Image 1: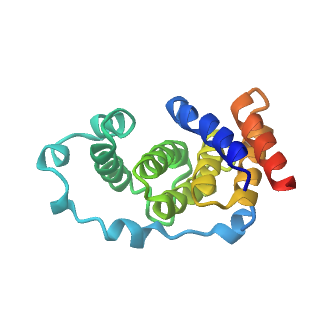
Image 2: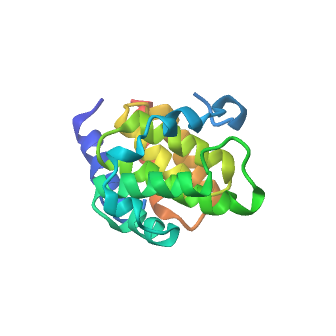
Length: 179
C-alpha cells in the first residue's frame, strides 16, 4: 500500500474518533454475544462501577477513560439484557447505542476483533444507524481489511448523506484500492 495514502487514511480516521465515533449482508453476520459477555466476570470489574445504576453506567460508557468505559458499557449491556439473543424492539435502539459505544472503546484500546463482534451485533439491532457502520469501517481499516472498510463507509454515507467524513473515507479507500 502506498505509504502516503495510508498516512492520509490514518490522518482522517484518527480525528474522526473524537466525533464518535465479508459482506454487508446482516444474515452472514449473525452474532451470539452471550458467549462474549459470559466471559466477562463481574468480580473483575471495579466494585464502584458495580454499584452504579444503569444511567450512570451508560454515561460512563461514552465519557470515561477507555478501561473504565469498557467495564461500564459491559455492565450496562448486561443490565439491559442487550447481549441475550431475543431483543425487545423497544430496547433495540438503546442497546445499539451501548454496543456502538462499547465497540468504539474496544477499538481505541486495540481490541479490534472484539470491537467488530460487538459492532456487528449492534448493526443487527439497528441496521440503519450510520454511526455503527462508520465505526465498523474504522475497525476494518485497523484490521487492514480495506474492501470491507470501504463497504462499511459507503453504507454509512448512504444512510447519512450529510456525513462527509464517511464519504471522505470511502473515497480515500476507493482510490487506494485502485492502485
